[in-house]
Image (cartoon, rainbow, N blue to C red):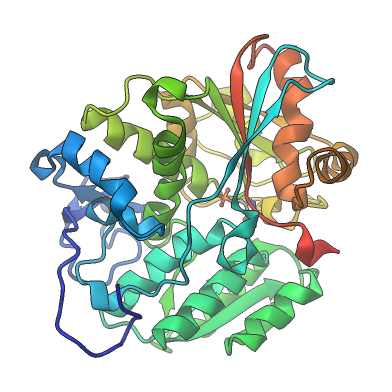
Length: 396
Ligand SMILES: Cc1ncc(COP(=O)(O)O)c(C=O)c1O
Ligand SMILES: [Zn+2]
């Protein structure tokens, strides 16, 4: 695999990408054009693959001999040619066995730690795929509103692909993240308010500049990168070793869509029988998705006066929330909320007890365990995987 833009012959990746499908009006679109949301109805678009053309068992077995980058799943990713892949070597993240916790008795707890991925968070997964595909489709300037991690990841992968990037960050974004974006050469704009304000400002300012929006679910390929979270869980634990549930800190919720797609596609390929329940955790001060799950609502309504210590979870009106809710419900999952105090306590406990540096977002699933048990969303004796989405180092 060469760096993006490096000279040499074209080598097909073997991607089985067939097209894009609108989640709102069911339109099928050609994936060869750069497309954000559905031109007809404005809904999110998701990638469609020709799964029938994959010899599933051989393909699955061949993965272990490939380089340890998420691009080993290239048949289920959208990039067509190797030379367009902008990679920083985003390797396989570890799944640590935390055993049984004093707080939660009989649960068997695993922690998947994406804190060691390039740029320190799981956002590397979505951005390596979105930037590579954007580069492949000839886009030369990208922008994103971000709580921090997505901005740092876009800045790094844009540098790698030699495309321009501009990042819109809420004013309260941790300073190391603001500095990191600039250090990778991206333009940085700070905006008062939350990511919603940053998004509005970004779309207003970038309209007419010919720059492409890589916001959560406003382009189809970040979700494909996040799909590798689910593919990797199955790859590491094996179909027989799957947890009963995955607990995930949800902001915009793309990770939930991504993991659901992974389990669905592996099921369609005959490689997985039983998918885990997806459990979304949000902070008490900003929980539009969990509120909608509890109310049985088809989509989230905007959260008034949002606040939390976990910047990545401060998403008061998630885009395409109907898709996120559908993904959770399809797995018979659900959601719960945690207080900021419980999040901060969990950051300390995970560091001291297990030697893992977690961000406040990454601590939220651990903090949620007692509540999930109390509410019956987890049952004694179950095996549960907590997703640490990012390192705690930028928060020190
Ligand atoms: C560390 C971390 N965890 C979780 C999230 C939320 O991710 P998602 O959009 O998949 O809900 C973010 C988003 O910024 C984040 O930075
Ligand atoms: Zn549509």
